[in-house]
Length: 330
Image 1 (cartoon, rainbow, N blue to C red):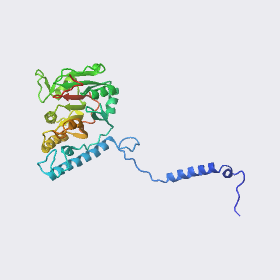
Image 2: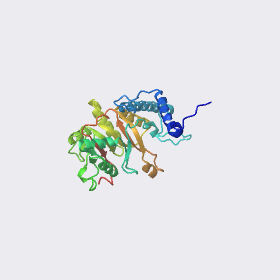
Image 3: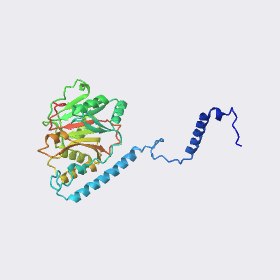
Image 4: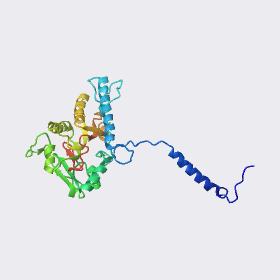
């Protein structure tokens, strides 16, 4: 005959409580038997998240793969590539497919400014915000007004603009204490008494006491090819890395061939620039849909050779010229 539990037994008086306690301790015992896995982090602390250097390494591998795919595509279609083909059968590529942003921003990615044409993609804006708080203000040189407005609002940056066709910065009372304008043209050789005054990027930075630029923005209506090539040649000739952490540029590729674009693009890559985001200029594509291919696109780059340089005189420069800056410049 099976034994009976006493009437005052805890199991008879509190069966659910006893079973819950037993289940809890059995679960702890089973969990203790599970194998433990080593952390994948190579940095300090116990976090299993990949370190910054590991994320950059993986992104570099993805970029190398994209370069290989680019040249395979060029080999497949031959040297006489049409940047925006309309032939039948359609080859299912356009110019921009050769320049896919394959490098990951290792921090948060944020579109700064208006959701319409004029906003720009920035990698790790929070780092600029943190540095601004730590260092008590930065010198930032920017352009289209919504972009500057958000930078001024979210950081302690000072805003400078350069556009040789404009005459002054827009009258924005909120921006006046930290917004400045210079009607300069950026070229390969200095000519400060010319009209308009011509400055190299190196001497422009020296004049403002800057050693490092957080973000360089360039919108010069098609002259970006020569300008960036000259800047790269200057620093390469002295064995120095480009002095900016990020580059934002609107590329005006109308009339450019695929081979010509690839040669220019790979000069940027050789200098350490890696595209992490692109955005076609859909306003232009819509406006010129019957007359021109979608030949304008915004690109954002990280400079992998200068990314760690964050504790110097940070600045964000925008260089404009040839366009009608109706909102910000007059």
